[in-house]
Length: 317
Image (tube, rainbow, N blue to C red):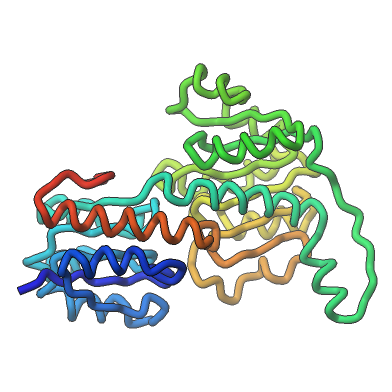
């Protein structure tokens, strides 16, 4: 019997047929789950007892799912972040967990720069007003020669730094695991967390969500930032206390924010949507044709390698 692979991702295969063709060529059976459905986890739970692999986007893969999967050999994250997968449960059951680092770096770095420009120049407000028949002017700010602070200095942050050089920005970063030599090679100065957030005109988040980083931006951090500063988050929503951010934005404690990620997604009934000085996008950092194809191919290759008894491209557990 051909091994079954559950696919629970909104965009897998949407930009290119190549990932699906790779699965078909390997002779595996695919079972699709609507990742947008509130019952997505229940659907996975029904399919998983007879499945060998799961290719997953943002649907949580819980201990309950893993415990009901006697044939499951690999959970392949279609993307990078794995905080929605119960890694300890996978480890106990001997299930390999993989992800796709590097596949979406350029796409997310592009969006981070786009969000900086959108926030600083109020681009969404101009678009909104013109469509409504108004010809208003909003006083914006420039990126040129401003100070950019990066929280985390992985591949995406490095990509943002590379792009920011085109705006002659002065770049600093906080990352306790980064090498000063590597940072210097990218034209970036490593500083303490407090120094970065206190001195930067734009603070761009590129850290993973862990117990240590959860709500790393709260009331005290917003008080430390410049009143003219902008917060950019393309990493994980849980890095930011959204209530504290609303207070900081509505009181003028910081100038603005641009967010692609949120604590709960899809974003619903959030007071952030009431504010003109925040730009909101729908966790779309990885959503380019190029990134979707790269992620799809890597996610499939990780699955096939594990099923063949080989080492995957990138193993998390």
